[in-house]
Amino acid sequence: MKMLKNIAVIAIALSLLVPVISSADQLDKVIKRGQLNCGVVLDFPPMGYFDRNNKPAGFDVDYCHDLGSALGVKVNVLNLTWGERIPSLISGKTDVVIGSTSDTLERAKSVGFTYPYFVFKFQTFSKKGVNINTFDDLKHIKVGAALGTTYETEYLAYAKKKGWGKNNYTAFKSENDAYLGLYQGKVDAIISTNTNIATKLQTKEFKDYVAGPFVPHYDDIVGIITKRSEVSWINYLNLFLVHQIRDGNLNKHHNTHFGTDAPAGLIQTLRDNK
Amino acid sequence: MDYEFHWSIVWRHMPEMLQGAFVTLHVSVLSMLIGILIATPLAIAKLNHNKFFSPIATVWVEIARNTPGLFQIYMAYFGLGALGIHLSPYVAVLCALAFVNTGYLTETFRGGFQSIPKTQYSAAKSLGMSRFQSYRHIILPQMFRRIYHPMTNQFIWAILMSSLGILVGMNELSGETQRLQSLSFRTLEFFIVAAVMYFIITKLVLLSTALIARKLFKGEI
Image (cartoon, rainbow over all chains, first blue to last red; front, side, top):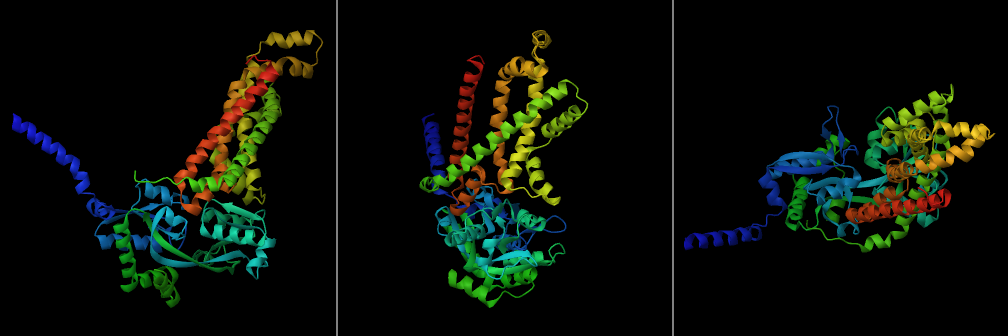
């Protein structure tokens, strides 16, 4: 009887120890689960969008699948809005968000960033005939952008520096709404990324529109994000990104989604910034 | 949950949050006033089966009560935009809120009018009051006293629904919170503070309506 009691005590003690010994990190969890929950913003072509069959597609989605096959697990792509990226990580709905997230130092206090995996330029987009020769011409027209994006922040910071005020500015809930607003004439120009604008220019709705000047002195360098505390997971993701360049996957996806080889400048920026 | 809260960043952005809270309060109070102003004649028209206004009231109430607020705000902004009518986010949200408030309040007011005995109308008439005078002095004061509580419910609902203004990029409390959290990714902190601010706003509004009511109704509510 006494022995049974002892065994029971030891069993309880061991069970208390188990969480300490096997403190599985995110990398272990994903492998054990056999599924990678990968968050992507599917409102941001060609990085993330729904294809003709309503399936997630795009550069970021391809990166999710590459990561899944590197890990040897299935991939579950979750559609996020810009604002849902962080809550989805904190609540554990996603293991990683490949969602064109600009790696500011302010944000890095809250989430863990990998090396950069892509670089954008911010650009104006407007109907032909709207007079925008330099970025400073935006002062005189109605400007819009998607709420909570870095180009919104950059535009507002620029406007503030120049003393323009916010009266001519409209925020839109999503990237698509910003394009809709431009199309309806609610604003004269929007700020977006060069990549998204290039995609829109190929559609017939926007054939009378033109891409204008870039936001001055700004490269938007984006990384993959995950929980800040998951250091070994971030290490793995960093190596994954190195391999994406080394193994030619970056180039392959660039060809698929942008129609050209990855420019040498892009690869150089990624290498310089890591 | 392995999450460390950083509150200092929220305090740093408090002026912008408060500015957003002010816009929230502003738009909901205004939408409520417009709602009351339109709903009163609509309710009377409905009760009197006015040939022209009664059908308008019925259609208004049906649409306002049976479609989501999100849809109404979207229609006011992008729907009218497709027809070439461009409202600013503030005006679009104000219109949508006033539209819904009117719909609900019309029904509330109708109930309030019906709860007043018919004899009072005849009594006012026998005192030589005109129709307008009897509404002004006899019916409306009693009606508003009776529907005071459902009306404050509607008010709170308008404050909370104004958060949908985020959909059309309005800089009310939710929109401002969304923008601020995207700078630092301190999503939880900013939204918790926003929730507390909504709570305080509704409490303040309830308190001030109670004070106004006490003054108007001489304590009897």
